[in-house]
Amino acid sequence: MQKNLRCLLLCEDIEQERLLRPILERRFRRVYVEPRKPHGGVSFVLQRIERLAAYIRQHQQEAVGLLVVVDGDTAGLRRRLEEIRASAGFTGAEWERKIAQCVPSRTIETWIMWLCGEREVDEQTEYKAAFRRKVEQGTMSSRKAAEAWFVQLSPKEQQFEEERLPALAHGRKEVARLEQFAER
Amino acid sequence: MLKRIFADNFRALVNFEFRPGPLSLLLGGNGSGKTSVFEVLGGLHDLIVIGQPVDELFAPFTRTRWDTRDVQRFELDLQSRGGTYRYALEVQHPDEPQGKPIIRSETVTFDGNLLYRFSAGEVQLFHDDETAGPVFPFRPDRSFLVNLDPPGSKLIARLAGFKKLVTGFRLVQPNPFGMEYSSSQDQAFLKRNGSNFPSFFSYLNSEHPEARTELERRLTDALPGFRNLLFRRLGDAKHLLAAFSDEMGSSFAYGLSELSEGQRVLTVLYAAVCGLVHEGEVLCFDEPDNFVALAEIQPWLQVLRDTLEARGGQAMIISHHPEVMDYLALDSLWWFERPSGLVVAKPYEADAASPLKLSELVARGAT
Image 1: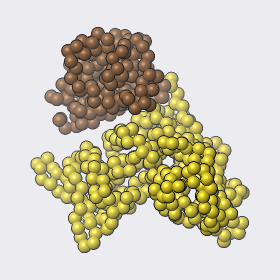
Image 2 (image 1 turned 60 degrees about the vertical axis):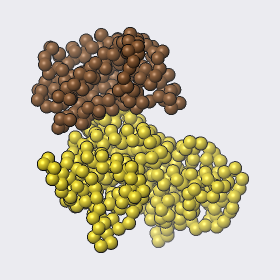
Image 3 (image 1 turned 90 degrees about the horizontal axis):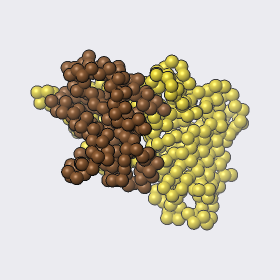
Image 4 (image 1 turned 60 degrees about the horizontal axis):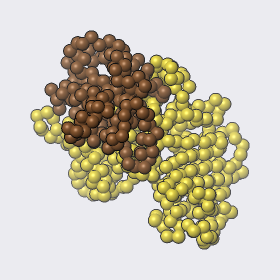
């Protein structure tokens, strides 16, 4: 592992941190969660992207990456990616390979439920309440989901995931891109 | 889990109530009463668990300075798996200056049913099946509860369960200048200032080796070059050393006195998390960020959060540090203030529309 290899995690809420920080910790020595704010939501994340993107651009030689996470909510994957890119001022430059974007759709709870084995989920339905019930019952947790992230999917499951949860399939590729940067 | 603290006529806490969450951040200006809440918990712990006399814990000067009442009142609500305990204590202060405070009454209930009552110099115990137990005289300068030895009598297992929960109140405010450097006996507790860390580590080493392993793993991440902790015997005492290696692979052992203040504080903070966080325990950290390097504050908070969620347990943190505020901004936030002299704690609602971070809002005087 590179010396002082670290990743900044810019996300909306604690549940996103619970899933994605342990995933990043497998590859990065340190994962720093950027400031969040009560009820800050997507807009607070988007406000903060520009300065963090500028930091990554200005420190291209440093072993530091950035993962931006915003829920798709009703806007969806495509629109959220456009919002992130517009906020960050992306131009297709080389340094942008150190910035990855995840858009859990509809929310991070959708991903966690899928990773914990719930197969009847889609990106349009709201699962927050259902997820909370499962957590209280002890049958689901972000911790279990983070471990399941690394379990190899069967070809059938992978196809199913790409069809039913395209934002998750996209997010996996983005995280894998950051991991490749970390391994260099 | 500690659900509620009530204090009346203690320092600036008058008719004061506070309901902490699983991980709470106590915010507020200097002198706003945050530490007084921890002192209530520490005082009740020392009364019930250590057996310290009430006049040492709640001396006359701890009464609210402008309050003329001669009784202090304290209550705790503690949720266990089966129900909720309520502990209530009244401390009677004497009229004459030479007199000592005594316990006027002390009760423990479980879901509203009495388990224990002390009043007028007499203890009344109640069995778990709600039938009356023994009645006997007891001195009013100490709590009888200290005599309950967990797991206690099978007939009063619930009362013993209450004491076990209070045993889990841990105040942590590391002071690197007060740390001892050797251990003469194992100690299962960590003193508030962390001064007995070598003896606590010795206890972990012999009774909870998995906690020792975890502590050393965490310190490897936090202290560059750190390898492990080891004892070297000198007479009756065991000196605790920290082994480091350089990039060439050479190894060096340093006494704790040779570590920096920040390294000592980090060692105590990680020891508290690895060795003390368990279901039912309540850890109270008072400005844990003092002396700690900026880049090491959040990693410690992450380990604290992960450990609380994995093992259960509860933590309250007092801090003025922006790193702490911004990382815990979505947890249970409490704002302490004294608008008319008395302490008020209210849930903190940050201005969601503001582009400023929580720490920036606090730093610019937002309340």
